[in-house]
Amino acid sequence: QQQVKQSPQSLIVQKGGISIINCAYENTAFDYFPWYQQFPGKGPALLIAIRPDVSEKKEGRFTISFNKSAKQFSLHIMDSQPGDSATYFCAASSSGNTGKLIFGQGTTLQVKP
Amino acid sequence: DSGVTQTPKHLITATGQRVTLRCSPRSGDLSVYWYQQSLDQGLQFLIQYYNGEERAKGNILERFSAQQFPDLHSELNLSSLELGDSALYFCASSLYPDTQYFGPGTRLTVL
Image (cartoon, rainbow over all chains, first blue to last red; front, side, top):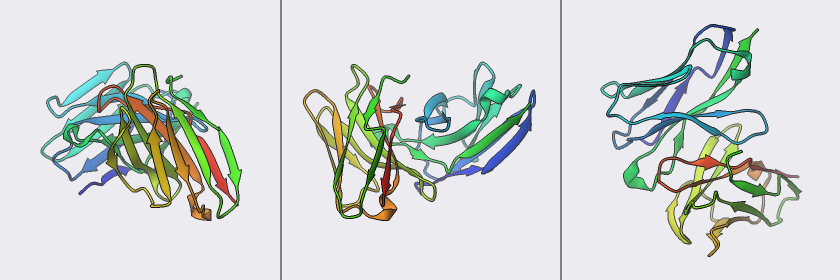
């Protein structure tokens, strides 16, 4: 029940295209859903996050879509750029549970020029 | 730069040995989290400290221990090391429970 399942494992997108990464969770106590971006040799960096009281959050080219009833959320990267090539992790946590993050397995995104 | 510092950046040691990883949180952050990243297990939560006290435990082996000092820096101690302990170890810090900022990590190689 603690798992967060992420797909796809890898993704190749052309420059200017839309990258979509999906995550699903089981634990209904989760109430915070961040996305992290990780470049090789670096630590994960917080990209964008959402709470279940909204269905969508947009920050620049990055959008999270959240479907509470389906227990799914996704990251959309619009106008994908080669500099977006990285590994993306979805995560979930419960505010009543110290905030420890449960991570998905990660998606390696390659944006081709 | 997240403001979280970790030392050392790389650590190479032998099986059976003991190592200590160090983390300094962002200024003002009271919580420190430790995560292990390996190819097969992904990013796994190990343990959390809040203002010097253990707050939560995850998939942390009994051979591993941690502590947070009065100046809020934290150390993760790994003992009786095995080949399978080779991984990236990340520290994250936060002021509030959800927004965690990760350090650059320590790459541990056990030979």
